[in-house]
Length: 377
Image (cartoon, rainbow, N blue to C red; front, side, top):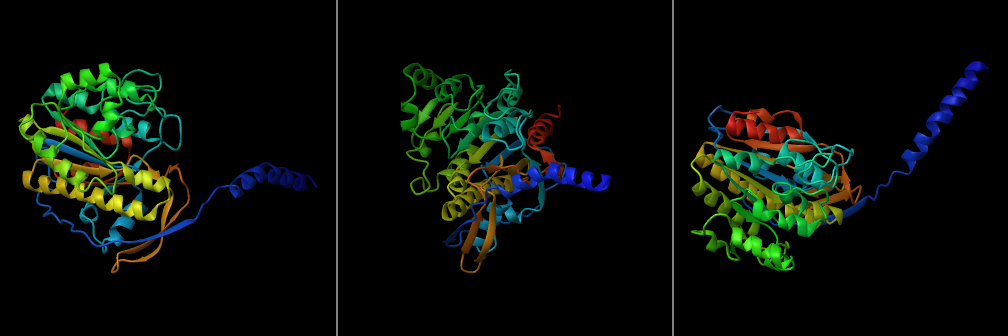
């Protein structure tokens, strides 16, 4: 009888857990898309994983890019992407200081500063103290620094590399941090978004940056330079992301003999996954891979550049339900319209890439970058 009572008590204790599990939302939204194959690049791997000196680091962040998003882009492209041709890879845990499921601000801050923080915070620790980001740590040592994104400059990921705000939604305050940023090159958002900012902020930014609305105008422009394109929407921006990545690399290479750090974000993979949009998810992944190709081609030629590709978090609980790589056809299922705590992939290419062949925190990636570039911890 005593054993029976204990068993009943145990069942009563775990019943709420089972009930809670039964309520777990699973949208099981299924979408289809067919795309034409695009080119991809396979490097020679001559310097990959060697201990050659690293002068430059290019960190590419695919917002919301989980393993399934990479697979979707790869199979839709006939089974090949530049990023999936790389040989060095690991995984990244993305949890924030106060939540098992991070947002872009907290994860962006971890990549930018090497410290975990609360969701919503930019460049601040959980106690709201400013944390120095990679540009702030590297620029005084002689490195040129830049950010490129298909989001606006006040978007959580690019903002994490220059702003210090307790809310990612403090749009005007984030833009007001730009005149004091340690950036030689900045490109994200549009001129119309800039024009919506307060007059004193616009004046301070214009006083600090050479502002251009044409990518060709970057050549010869005095640093720091800010390029604001006409549009960052997928069907309007054309080759903005790969072209601007290439231009940023060229520009930063000329700004310092010491080296450079560049963060490039494919921001809209995440936005398409939030909408459970199969076609948009695949096309944004393919666009991001073209920017990756630009970085890998430069690293291959330069021999002293480390390229790291990862994500701030996974979005959508994406899974593959079928497809035909020969036809570029993919069928995806989405388990959520939100972020998930799933571990995200990391790919690396170039000297010292072997240091990223492991499970690691997003904050670890930042600290490794700083140590590899400077020899300091």
